[in-house]
Amino acid sequence: MRCLPPIGAGPRRPAAAVRRTAPAVVACLTAFLAAVPYGAAARADSVADPHAATRVLPAAAYGTAARPHGTAGRAGSAGSPSLGRGRPAVTSCPEPPLVDGGIPRSREYLTAIMGCLNRSWSGHFARAGLRFRAPTVRFYEEPAERVCGVPWPTGAAAFYCTEKATVVFPLTGDWIEGRTDLYPLKIAAHEYGHHLQSLTGFRARYEARARADRARRAELNRRYELQADCLSGVFLGSVRGSLSRTAPDWTALSEAIRAAGDDGDDGPRTHGTGAHRAHWFDRGLRTVSPAACDTWAAPPSAVS
Image (cartoon, rainbow, N blue to C red; front, top):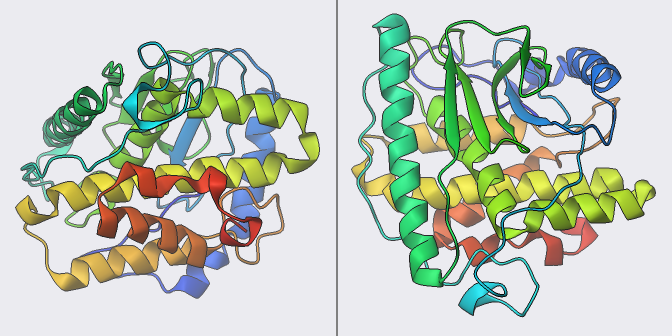
């Protein structure tokens, strides 16, 4: 996945500065894929440190995701992945301050946000007739040598271990310490989106398609990542009224997402243009509807 650049109260880097980090993206991607070949048994979907301005392309593994009771639940046809109809209930999720406090404050913030995510999505799954299981959460004060059976992704700020259904958060680094913007919340919500994809069968379907059609892997990966962007928007939309945020905060987040697209990169285009990333996040934010996040049914022109 591609990292969102730092935003908020502090100085913001212009989009051009973010795009100049493309060589770092390619270097990070190359190193990670060399360590974890496509098809490895364990995988980490990661969001990179905003200071490094990189995201790591996940090396795919193939397994079975948790399925809804019986078929796809009330929201879809038998055997088809589904996130359910309707909207997550509007919930309250006030953000603990992050401006100071170090590691204890980072843990407090992320614990609170993960609690919000669990409450929001478990309630939605129950109403949709879908089976829910909260992800495991692991905190590290510093990056470890290995996690989830693979080397810690270079520059990763947070990531989701698909085979272990675990969201991993380092408690230090520019991505979390002393921040006053929406960036840490967006990271947590995006990684949680990958957990939802595993629970509902979208990940298994994506991986099976990628295995069968190597030529379309980049496009399929874009659909996978853009769906997680959209689902993060759904969650932020559901708690928006409880966040003490102003219009400029939301505008800054949208601009950061747009600046973090695949535009102009030399490597594989696996995450979508900035315009498409911003579009899918905003679609989730406005509709607050998981059903609106069906990137798999979108035409190729909407996920380029």
